[in-house]
Length: 373
Image 1 (spheres, rainbow, N blue to C red):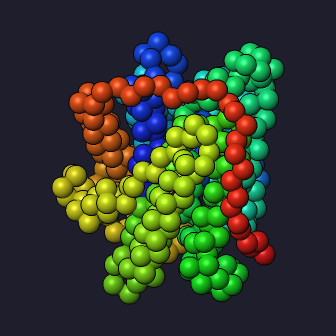
Image 2 (image 1 turned 90 degrees about the vertical axis):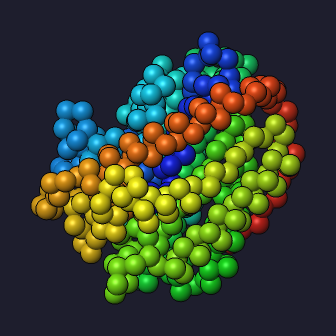
């Protein structure tokens, strides 16, 4: 599904908004992503990328699966609780005109990618393009509720978290039986990813999004599903090199978009070093095992913790829950680290001035792309 690195800054946006905007304003976040940030959208789809069954949720409140791809809470859940803000609900759980859309929505879908071809074998999933189209419907519903002017201000001031890209590698380019890995060199593939991503950023900007955070990929070569490809179960160096190349190109893309799109405040968050440190030095964080999954499903088809999986008893000692996703314990450690770092920076830095909120006609920004057939 996804990788641990993608979730690290997912809900940094909540903290950022909390100190950038006035204290009286409600924090509003719109979340786009894959299985690391999903909170249940795929429960409503005919998808093979689901986690609404045991043993997912075994350590969540009530001990039941919710559609989160972990044994408990996501990092977003934990940071939201620290800030007293509920995690946005899944888009597909809401009626089109539900008042909840004014407080934020989560569009994340397990198996989703930047490319529409990514995750095809999961059957149904909401790709990034699908999620953007869903947000467009949300925006129309907001306009019907509060009027055009108020709706424009609302979407301009909201914060947009975007966590995409790992499935484009794990469930596309790195799969030997799929066309992408045979059709493109990595240089061509990463160019395809970044050009497509540029178009998607631009579309969100046209819809009114201004404050967008895209976080880079973590060390994909070190997640259990990739380690098993090594006879010594070590990190795959080449995969990590490719990931860092992707991160570098996206960082440059973000800088370019900020220059061309009026009032754009797009940020790139590099999570690679943080995640790598957790994986390479687990004992420093209170863990014992970071090279395999608690569910012992590294080599299983799909890599998920199915009801017939043998779950470890010492779940708090594992960094990874299944072949792709972190445990509740790992999420808690990372959330605490993020929260402490974020608010230390916030308390020691002057509050920046609010960004302008008018929505002028965007200048045209051309991004080339290739079709993935």
